[in-house]
Image 1 (cartoon, rainbow, N blue to C red):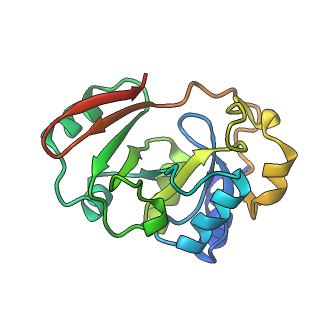
Image 2: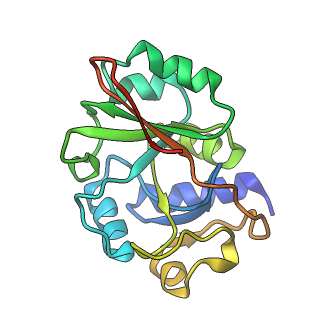
Length: 188
């Protein structure tokens, strides 16, 4: 299994507006180009999820972060530096992403990833990558590849051929930060 080949295959599918099933730094995710509303709509449909339940995006560093958020509260950097576990930050007023990705309160959840597959795929895409757990809405989050339902596997355009044996850690911690510096933990 060649990580570079998998990155290439996933990238080709994403570039054409497809959706992929892939390993993240937490659980298996369904993803697509965060700037492509049609691809995002496909994920909502596959998950049978209401579009008002926003999904998060993965990024690979501060350049991408600043492309999506003009104002990033100081505390965001502190949390990212101090977090030992994968942490998703929900920030105000995203831009340069598809409108159907943004929550009704005009926020977007993001996570900076270090996991090599996601990191390198993001480098190639130069755009954020949607990440939502690989389950039908309301069903349990699969802890490993073999717990993912056939419906999800058949519903995506590409399944990344890495880490099929790995058991995932828990989903990320989610912390909501507002531009007026309020901090609220949504999921520990």
